[in-house]
Amino acid sequence: MQTSDAVTTFIRLPPQTYATRDQRIAFHEQLKARLLSVPGITASTVASAAPFSPAGRRQLTSVDGQPTTDPPPEVMTVVVEPSYFQTVVRGLILGEPFSELHGTPGHEAAIVNQRFAEVYLGAGSPIGRHVELRLPTAQRTYLRESDAPVPPVSVEIIGVAPEIRQVRDAVPMVYLPFRADAPAAVALIVRGSSGSGPGVAAVRNAVNAIDPDLALGAVRTLDELRDRSRAGPAEMASQFATIGVLALVFSGVGLYSAMAYAVKRRTQEIAVRMALGAQATQVRWLFLKTGAWIISAGVILGVPAALVVGRLLQNTFVRTEARDPVTLSVTVALLTIVALVASIVPARRATRLEPTAALRIE
Image (cartoon, rainbow, N blue to C red; front, side):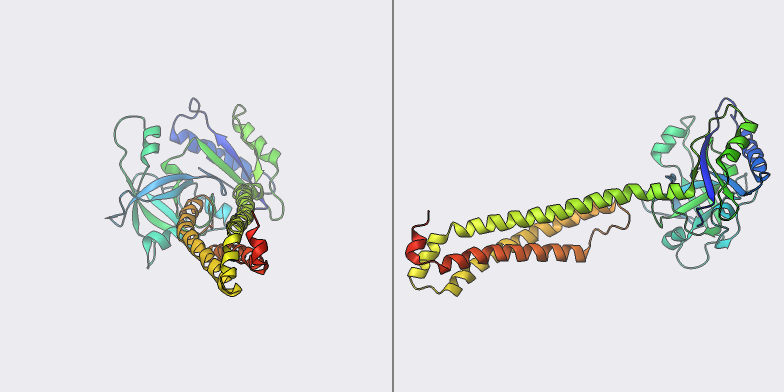
């Protein structure tokens, strides 16, 4: 997706002035005509969410008439104009874009991304398949105007879009036609000629020419949105990595200190064993086995706990695996080595002492 020559801003149409769907559609059609008349602007579109931004969600209740799981899985949804895909990604992979009819009664349609097709549609062409979508309970409660239940909407898949990242990579996405909803709050996306984004002033002037009282959000390039979307998770991931390394270092230091102290306290016992004829290697092996038992207990308790924490982090960070064998293996190996060294080094020192000198140690 080319991001360097496109800008986006947020527009919220006040309900007092744009109360009906037709009024909102007419405003955006007029705005698009003005923008496309500006030299250097090659495309314009609106969507309920810009790329690299949070999007809405709906429950996928059935596929080709077959109910999905209970509760139904939630998929990310974006309401888009027919020109959305040509503006953002230069077209679809398969099928056809929305027309001006799609979204009107009898022309219920949807476009899905490749990830959606892989997860929910299986083999074969997605074109012509039917899926049923429903607003999640929280959104139904918030958005409904009456107590009447909101029925699911059945739509026909007419196209497959390339991956357009919202807040996470490669998540199932469903795109719905703008005429079916025409939300009051939308993201305006404007693309300029290759190599130079459209001027911010041109976008503001076009909006002000239609409605001078209309508030316009900050105008940002898609490059900025992409960088902002990466900054938060990347920064948090960096902080967690730093904390993890520090925790590993402190764990190693603490483990070594505790093990070394426990062995050192048994110096007199070592002296007695040596005085009774025990060999140094036998004494060292005795303490090595004791350390090994402690290590085994720590692994048995620690690895399941690490998997639980990994599952929590997987829900927070993109591309984080709950079961990361490399990380777990390296961590266990490092702490095992530290514990073994902490067990053998003090014991080795104690076996080198004269038994009479060792017995006098308090």
